[in-house]
Image (cartoon, rainbow, N blue to C red; front, side):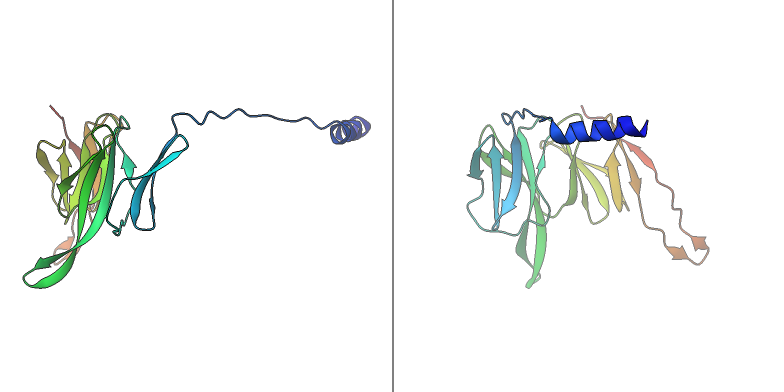
Length: 179
């Protein structure tokens, strides 16, 4: 048995086999941030989407159907004569080539896995938008995830110690049914 193994190893070294892989680079769509600008690369062509240099704290996200690109942009705003940083949520439509601001201070956006609906957090409030209406889903949410069918969420919140013990630490499930 050992001789057969050695013969196979020697044959593999003498007659190596080449493995070829065909990669289809058509329909490749990538969105990224470079030097303070939002870019896309479709097939082999790169295109810059924004004209002003900005800070983008999170990577851009493609919508369910791949026609919309969600991104977050940090901007300075004046609140009671004090400068604060706001985390604006924007959507770029690949067909119309237009940018639309969907929320002035949202964080942790996530696309629905089944349709072009965005969920995001605003100070512990879980919101959902279909770009026509906004829905408040839950309060006190620290993190969340869409359910695979896109009809609801599983959410978590921080526990806090109160005089009568720890606050409930369960992970509630919230249902959301779009129209």
